Image (cartoon, rainbow, N blue to C red; front, side, top):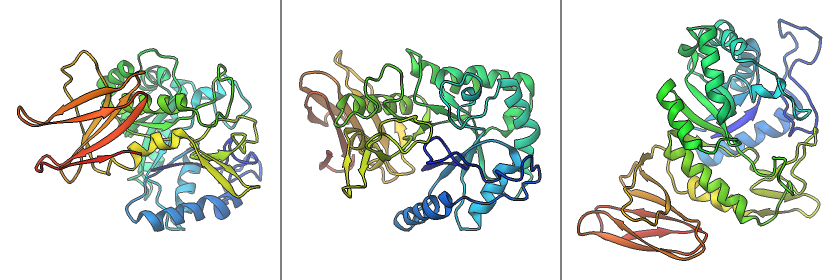
Length: 361
């Protein structure tokens, strides 16, 4: 799954759109993909498609109804299917701007009316009517305010919403409770669409090489989100340079992979290896299951049944001591896993065999 910007973002080397000129061109007569698409984004997507072979889900973000459709159309010409779009990236960014970045502010009522009257009908009446629409695409504590206000502004808006996009950054002390509440109230698919470290005001360093603490926060976030209805979790930038860019607006952040082009080198951060436990070992089509814990010493865990029928368990020991975990498959069958302090391990079990396949990275 890939999330790409429609046009430029702050992590572009320059601010741009696909229809900069002529000004006020409502017909989008000069809509043209940028060099960044033809020279960088599209070749990379093509390379991924060659390796992946299976369907690559691409979710794209910007704003404006016809603009969305024209983007989907241009990428289709190059045999790239856009699986979903979001209503815009971080609608609060243009209301309470904290940085000079590409953003468009939406109050909930305005966003609801625009989606119900413009974007929804435009997309559904086009030949791209199977493209999904994910709403809000902002921080967790903003979701209910937006969704409630959108519904209040236009009661038909929910029929155009296929899912709810949420970001990693949250001021809530109980993110899992908020996700449960959103799922129960709106009954829509929830997808994590953006995450990074080093972006908050209390981060002493934007890029922190070798930081286990940042990897641990990724682990906790993914486990919590997916145990509470999120169907996926997406990193912001898989790789950046040593400064956390390029970023024309100076909005630098950290990344799982840091690239040093002058040395023709790259390094993989602890965040990369944390992500690997989820991206490498959970196959597409897996279904989340719940582990019943019968011990007062609880280990953070996330579990799935894979399409092959195997049980996949990701275990994270955040404690400063080694913990022995018994995974009981039945009243008479169990396996013992030793998890060292501050360690994440993934195990895969074939419940029909007595063999345990243990995977660790």
